[in-house]
Image (cartoon, rainbow, N blue to C red):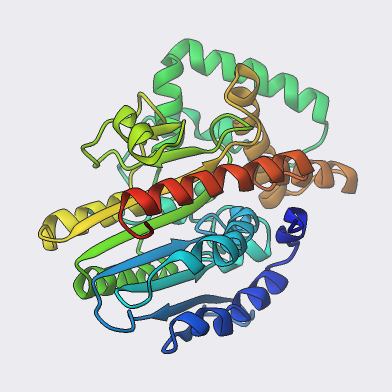
Length: 376
Ligand SMILES: [Zn+2]
């Protein structure tokens, strides 16, 4: 049996090297497959890497797999890429199917184990179709901005946790749970050191990826895209998170993909987002390529769980990490704890978690590829 645990690597560099080494495996099926890199601005050796090939006979359909839009989530994404290459890619038909594999959409975040890029930008709030990075968007975020980034050093975990809990209840009492979550997660373009910040203009990572999607939509009759994420939903059951712009109901997709948990990225079923990457593709498709067949979804590997505990812990862990990043911590051990908690939220260490995650991914890859006509 393959050693599943060895799929999960610990550094950006080792993951990137493994990815670059996939080229010969991809070329064994698609002789024309080529490696591509976009080097990010700045001195660090950070690249968005992808491998692409046309179909060997006719460009009828394309399969796209992307990872690491939220940097730190790229470690689980990279493991799923490894699994896809080993188990699922061999079943595709290169004669009519092109392939696009993307390693680390957000290489800075992956290398530094953060969600955002170097500018603290959550790339999944930057895929805006026909709208701008509007600083006035989501004014409700202002009410919780101070709570989310207190602007001071982490000094005492116990007191910080008590403070966090009291403030959380205070804000929920004032705003209501739904409005609180809505304001928190929707995205904001005004607080550069805050959470879910979308920046003031389109980041270079986003532009690179947008160009790739446009190229795929114009080259193929059918486009299927699966994007890897972690952090939300039940701990031991990966959720397929469909775009709010997809018309099919979650129940419909559960049957269609033979996969037990499908949700739509709406305020009711998941949470609402502005600038979501898959939403961008839906807008691109509906506005410019409506004659094509298109489906995209995200694999969300839950970590802390969707119980009350998980719902309250996730923002706490993110607030601590963000605060420690910007303002530091009084001791090294406080800093380490803030980082470790964050890592567990997006890149869990438990073996049983990793094994179940790969199992769920297998079921979803299989069900989706079959339903969309990529394997028979
Ligand atoms: Zn994510």
